[in-house]
Structures are given as C-alpha cells and as structure tokens.
Length: 63
Image (cartoon, rainbow, N blue to C red):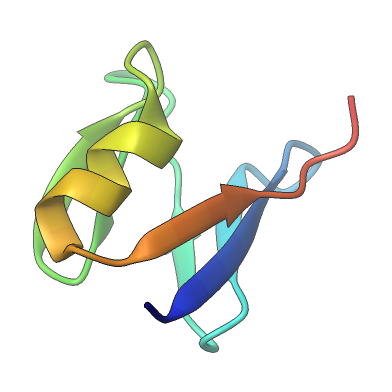
C-alpha cells in the first residue's frame, strides 16, 4: 500500500502532502479540500484520508 505523508503548517494555515499537494485551510470552517474532497480538522484527518482514498496517510506534524 502506498504511503503519503502530510503535515500542518500552522503559520501559513496549510496542509502539505509529500505528493506535492498544498491545501489551504479555511479558517472559518476549519476544513480543507484534498483531491476534490473536503476534510474537517475536528475529525480524525489521518483516518478519514486513509478511508476515502484507500491509501496510508501519515501525519508528521511536530507539535
């Protein structure tokens, strides 16, 4: 199974994926669009991505 890493850049309010995709986070809805699908920060983003695209996604954000 392919693995995609991503992290949250809270300074720029973006989600950055190692496949080259950079998504803006909507501060009003606390969500972002990735590959045509909307994801909410209040949910388990990693799990939602894995389920939606049948790939492994790993959050590498350092808190």
